[in-house]
Length: 464
Image 1 (cartoon, rainbow, N blue to C red):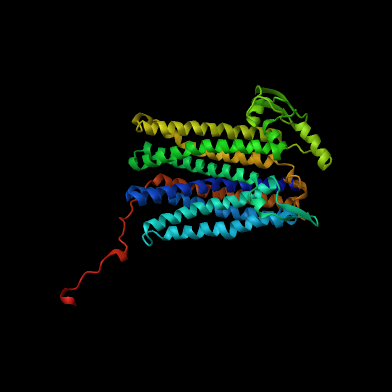
Image 2: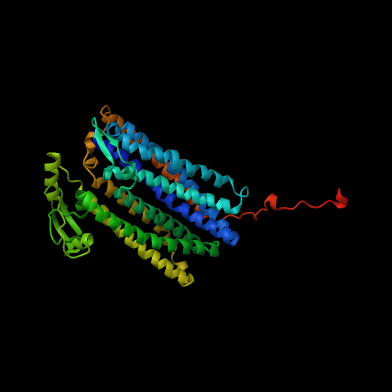
């Protein structure tokens, strides 16, 4: 019944629920925009039907994301008021811009897109969807700018015990935030690609609208492969930078306890958290140094050495996060990411082979690949957020000092149970709607109507 632990559990669970919807929204908007552009350029009604099909699933997911995201912002004031008081002048700025600019931009133009069919020109309607996709990803950028400050605070000074912003440009250009955004952007594309790929396989297996779903199969496989590789590259660049600004988090993800030059890479390991050591491991010699320095030499600081440095810098205390959680989350994320690269590469080969019937008939079980990005996304954020502990703002405020002082364990526990129950219902409802409309397949659309301005008024006889 520890108040800090309960508050952390509450925020973690609501974040995981919310982030179930976010990556699909970020990525699927681009797919819908691309398909509608293909329709505008070709005039092929099949692309219009695909646009409306995937667009409907985008809307369902978007609505659920909005509902779950609102609760998270209220928690900063309810559960983490000391944090809000200390860093609100900095942290609140990007969140305000996200709400007033990016979210309003996205939601307003989404309304135009929904009700604008046959009311505005095809080119303008497609342009609106591109603005929606851009707006959604702008929202992600502003939120990650705030999160990047928590991971690596920049552009501030401490005045009367509170952090105040001194350089808004530094906040926006924070490399930690930029790496997070790149990683999240490509993760969204991968999530959408596997969502589209999985349901395309579902309909191909059942011989529904074969030509249309072959198009979405190929498009998702191509974007999925490019994005899955890009996620890995962005993640590696982020990891290299992480060693510089959050060495404890970097060492935690590798269960690297002792400083070494060269440093070995643990594929898997047994971890003794209390003894601060690994009990056994399967390692690749010198590989960790190579990952960080691109050569088979280079000193990588260990957890025990960093702990001693932090004690000298910040005072007595335990600054080592949950090593088993960080270590295995990282390996789950990388393992699933590698699998997704192989699957999308295989899907492109299948498309190149003209979708052999033998393969299609035996591939129905592959629909479950839809869930792979969600595993990678969740474990990635668990790694990011738990690796920062015990800090709420790295180097400035510990999590135990950020919780609201007047909360009682019973209050947080009751709200925690309530949020989990409500979010579980919302999750079930979202999955029900997504499955219902995804399994229905394409709907018939009306032929393009001719704009009234393009119709020439018939001439009256006799000049009358």
